[in-house]
Image (cartoon, rainbow, N blue to C red; front, side, top):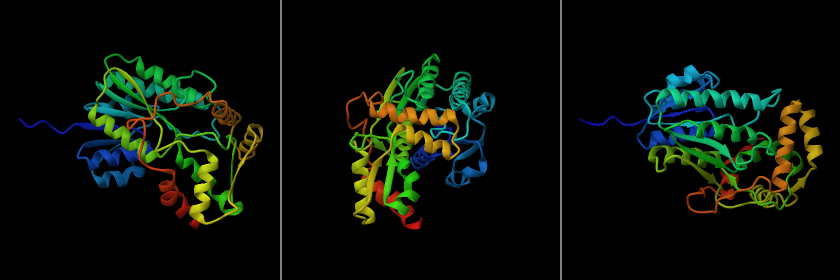
Length: 304
């Protein structure tokens, strides 16, 4: 009797890593159940052959139903902060509890969880503290093979600076200009999550850092942008953590979230947040900063 093709569930399928994971699995011939808050946002994935499932990430019953019958699950807590949330850590904990309960009650035996570099620390890392707690919850579920992907600094964060870059030929952030950052694209994260989920080449709980193609400082990244847009006066400007926090507040970011994001700057500059695993073929991903800037940053910059 022919064995049915395994089915994998992708949570956060409307987001960057979830969408990339879904597309990668579908391209490899796997069945995929794409889970998101809004089915309407997943229509393109349905057109590619995904089974679309609408479920709120804080609803464990809905997630349990979505996970049933799956070979494995990609479990994602929204990585981007909610700017006006009064207690983003509480939101993270609510989603983590929901995902973990669904994993425990659905019969799934393989999980890839999206985490972040620095998640080994219980404090001092801003929103990554919530991912530390998420890791602890997932790891405590018995009889599950769990892979925790601790991804580095998203290259997509550079896209948030396009308006300022276009207007002033400057990118401003609180990071030491020469601090090596493990820049990685969300597309590469999603693709790696899909590959690991499909192969299941680990047992028990394992941590895998995703460090990007190479470490790149903000000074170097801005230099790549300057070359790509042909602007010799393009520069990186380090702002103080205090000024960064004040600017977030001026933009309407809640005190709780602004405090968390300021702590990210402190954690990176002090090397409290850093990669622990050696760079290898498995911890590296293929997209270079040059390729990302050319393919993603420059078109948006020119259209701004």
